[in-house]
Amino acid sequence: MKDIKNYTLLFLIILSAIAFSILGHYWNIQYYQGENAYTLSAPPLATAMKGIHDKLYFADYASLIAGYSVNNLNILAASALVEPEAETSSQLSSEITAGVLEIPDGKDTKADALPEQPQTYDFTTTTDKYFQDACFIGDSRTVGISAYAGIENAVFLCKTSLTIYDYEKPKITYNDEKKSVHDILTEQQFGKIYLMVGINECGTGTAQSFFEHYRDVVNDIRKLQPDALLFIQGNLFITEKKSSEGTAITNENIAERNALIATLANQKDIFYIDINESSLCEDGALVSDYTWDQVHIKAQYYPIWKDFLLNHAIIPDK
Figure 1 (cartoon, rainbow, N blue to C red):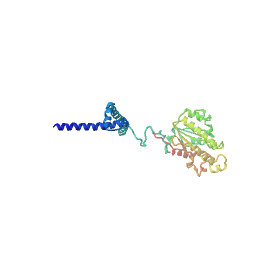
Figure 2 (cartoon, rainbow, N blue to C red):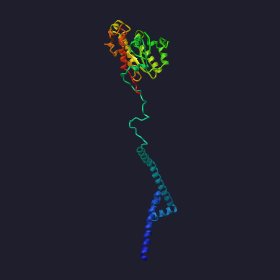
Figure 3 (tube, rainbow, N blue to C red):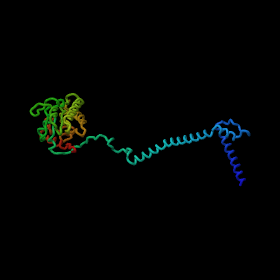
Figure 4 (tube, rainbow, N blue to C red):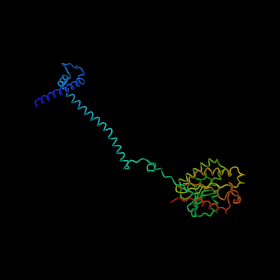
């Protein structure tokens, strides 16, 4: 039993000597930069004793703590970089699932919705009551409509030889007073306005200058009558014989001006009606049998004009 204790003590001494020798060798490299050469009189164990004397074990302990702290800080820093990303991904997933974030799918939204455009309309057929809130503006041909077409309860602002340039001139007798078309439209509102002037202007200026003035009048009427439907009527052709004899008032000049004013129509609140598409004309000219002077139609044929207008009515959706 005594021998066992002795051997155990010897074993512990040898083990301690080895452990301290290893520690001495470590300190010699770590702190003494290998300056302690090993000899029989100065083994690694001696360096360990010197290190204990120099309290190197405190330095090792501090390094151990520092290393642990640094490692923990690095781990925490890495976590700080990684975890928010994971959290963000998780949060993003949750928000998408919950419908908080929406990926545009090209469908209409209130923010991206375009302003609603005015509706366009096509011509339809109606009855004589359609003209009850109408106003007809024009020259001698419109005078003929007022007298012979059978249109009742409409207002006629017309005069022989009236031109687009007379729009602001007091040439119309209205309520026993001489007034301009502009002034009358300022005073009274209409549901529909029919405008036909232009044949008398064929001998004045150019087609372009006529169009520009005509456009200005249309724009003014649109401002004065914002709720009215505005019908621009193309000028009726003259007979082929009359056209071939003239130099200013010809079917070619009439057609050129009609083509220009037709561009003002938008099929929303301004419409172009080409009376030359009616049975009053044939092959680009007024039918000679329907006219008494090759320019104006006979009284009995004006109902054809009225019917053509009724077949080109606009009835907006309510």
